[in-house]
Length: 174
Image (cartoon, rainbow, N blue to C red; front, side):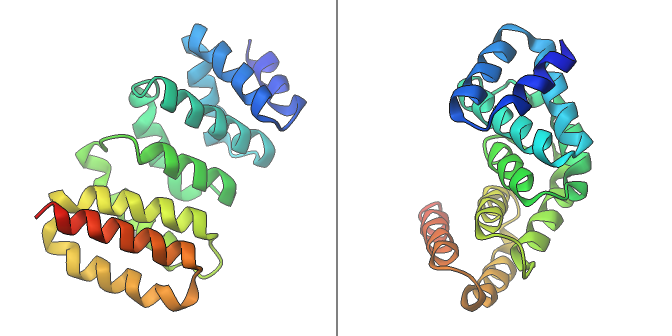
């Protein structure tokens, strides 16, 4: 099963192919664990496509990778492919993060937001994760806002837009 799934991921880069992998994983839960393992293994092409499949699985069945969150969070800072980081950050946005990983995830996200060469999509997803954690740690709000505002001149309009959308939502929660 493992090699067949890996080969399918490598067969073609298309939404149709990822949907096929996702459908298979929905019917075979052990495939979900293998997809997480492929992301953790961090081989560029396979890890990006496995992450994409995990994203689609999370959209269909929100709790599908919850038991593997600790594994993903443990290796997050070791993922070298920005496309994989972007997709995994997008997956993590959907979950309540276990408390023991909040600090590590928070630090990772701030590092990505401040990274000069990190693509805006990774930064935006990490910004959302940070804003998801802020209600629990309101004392960090001003510091986070300052960090992000310092980054606005060096990033695209998409970065700025995400910040202002999240900031508005945060201010409505008061």
